[in-house]
Amino acid sequence: MWHAIFIQPIFNLLILIYNILPYKDIGLAVIILTILIKVILFPFQYQGMKTQKKMALLTPELKKIKEKHKNDLTKQAEEMRNLYKKHRVNPFATLAFLIQIPVIFALYRVFWGGFLPEKLSQELYHFVANPGQVNLLFLGIINLSQKNFFLAFLTGLTQYLQSKFFSKQTLAGQSGGFSKKIQEQMIFLGPVFSFVVAASLPSIIALYWLVSNLFSFVESFYLFRKK
Image (tube, rainbow, N blue to C red):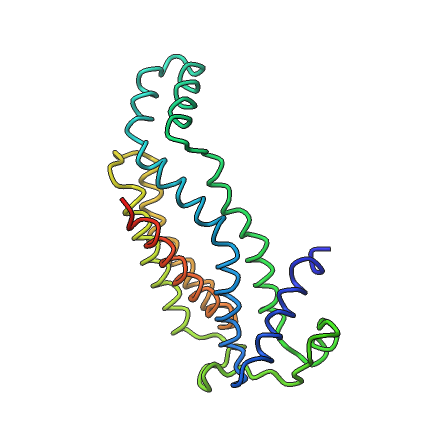
């Protein structure tokens, strides 16, 4: 069921985009597919980021409530609910990010599986033309079926820039604490993890990750440029 609902449709959409392109380049098809998926998921991503922004602005008030009712957890929870209600904040909206997880795993499975002729003949729907041989040379230079440290480095760099910008907005005004320290450490640990993973897998995954990071940066800028 997982394969039929997520993996196969994404694989067919990727090949459909590849067939439409005047210049057959699976890398360009991956870029278009990534942007298309990010646009589809944008409402969920935007809602989650918007809620995180609001909760960051409410951090001083939340801290006051916790200190004022530190010995009465029931009253503390009630005051927090009233604060969220007053500012029209739904804390559970941050879980909107979770909708992306199955899509991301499906994309990895699509890219990891490769584009062997037997896979194309088995996985493609009847209305999607079989291209036969898929061009894996991105821009005629990078073989996306192999590892590429340059794309992996760009993946880590864009992850850092996106995390740095996002954390600058959400952590602003927050006092020191365990949660804040963890988030600050993730600004550096996340990009390192991204680089290590991207450098150890076929570079077609790094390309997807890179484009996704760039799009996420644009999303963050679009949201946080507003006061």
